Amino acid sequence: MEFNINRDFRILMRGKPNRPDADNFDRESDRPRSLLLDKVMQGRPRASSCKLLRLPAEILAKVVDSLDDTASLESLAEVNSDCQQLACCSHFAQVTFDYSLEAKRFAFDLVEDKKARSIRGFCIRKVIWAPDPQHVANNHRELYEAFYDEEVEPLTDEQEQVLYDEACAEYVEARAATVEAISSLPNLETLVWKDEFSLDKNFFEKITRCSARHIELDRPAIDDAWSLTPPLTPSTWPLRSLKLDVSLAHDKLREIKNKGETGTHPMTRFFSTLFHLCSSTLESLTWTYSGEIRDKDVPISIGETAVSFPRLRYLKLRCVKLDSVAISSFLTAHLTSLGLDEMVLTNPSTSTCEPLRDLEDFAVSHPPTEAPACERIAEFISQHTGLRRLYFQENLEGIKYLDNIILPTLSGLDFGNLKSLYLAWGKTQIPDESLQMIARLASLEQLSLRAGRPCEWKYYWDVDHDKLRHHLRPLQRLTKLALAHDTYPLDVDSLPTGFYYHCPIPPESVEKANARPELDREEMTDGVEEYTTRWERTHRNRMLDQAEQYAAIFPKLAWMFCGQRPMEFVRASEGKNGLPKAIPLTKERDQCRTYLETLFKASD
Image (cartoon, rainbow, N blue to C red; front, side, top):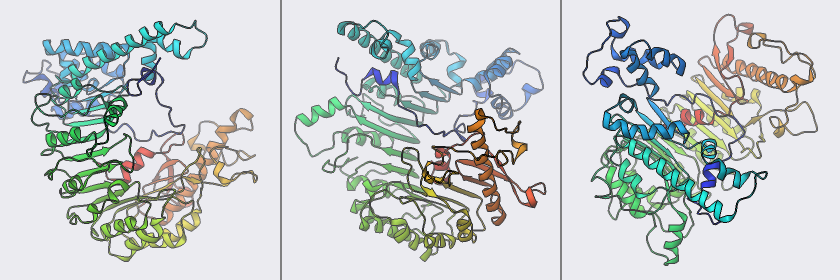
């Protein structure tokens, strides 16, 4: 069988491999609150005379949102009709279509509910389309076994093709039903679409007419670069925020290339008409391009003349090669938050734009590899000394611009408003001179330092906490401090420190593991079966000890991350030796990647 890379059903059943390290800390904060009961009732009076249910709808919403388990909501729904509607407000605030049988059935039910004006659809504020590979495999078990189970009797190519075509058709039908249901949800605010199967024209015809004003398109391919204009779409699409990562299906891209190179990027028509639809209302744009990128590719255009974005405040561009008109269009908006990478920073048009008078946050995740472009970054921030938040990363290859360009600029000018700084070095150590320059930024309230990149989950920043504390001591306003990619010596001299997490070797004695009995139900013994647990507890206690020493010199420090452990502090007399006491915020180690990015990088 031949497979189209953008319509390969095997990917839906197989999924993408997960990273082996945890990233779960503080991940539940984006669930929407319940719709207010009064809005759901649509002017009808509440049936119950109960005093609780006579409370203002805002208070009731907070109460029901605190019931974070299905069983409690089901019990609430059984009390009376008002409670039933209140429970629905919470339960259906966010709906995930994961291709389970229940989710597929619910999508078809919502289409029918539209006719009956059911309360369920009325309560939905956020929809996520994210097929779970396990559900996809279970729904098409015979096809899955034909591809991946060597013990079943093999099918003929013709039989496989029939099953495969049926599965694709069923998937497209279920997706179409979901899109149809979404288009009629009156209170939908947010739509997140994660799909490995390319999108057709019907998808955009429907979602441009739905009520959602916050859209995230997470890496889907599209069958063609349509022109998003009437009658396919309305004349405007009043979006407030857009997270966009859309590319052209490979077969269509190949078809265009076979016809000969053109002077226009194949996605220009799609992107230009898209932004003309929403430019007047768009407040936040995160635009990533995951399609094929080559140096000789022509840049993407959003129009021959500049497009006005009067409400745009948050802009993040990644891997998007834009022409000068597009860059000018975006950088003349009244931005308060800006994230750029080498694709835009290497374009001379960027440096000719006027200073952004309202800019507060600036991030560079993937810097240029040439010195002149890096120097333009320093020139840019020197024109914006009122910045409150900065985020810089180095590449493993290319110029090491933090030590020689960025930090001298920051320490040489008055950045008195700077509250947050994130610095990630490409090399494995941070020079003393750089730490000294950071320490001059006395206004900092949160700081994140990282050195080196993990390779096969091994880390290489052999951090010296005593030296860090010595150099950073002047930063007396710090409330948050994060140290990432840090590693520590092993108890076995023959292994380098880079293997600290990869090959956990606990000390022979259990004394260090039992040093904080208030955190553990049982004491450790010398049993071999507790080998890993002993190491984890020893490591946790080691990080807590280090964190308490930081809190002792930073009087406002409230949160810290090191050794893959997020921690907070209790400043009371019961702290060990009168010092602030560090408290772990997770039971296990956590990379906190998402949390740190939200905390230190500009967030829409």
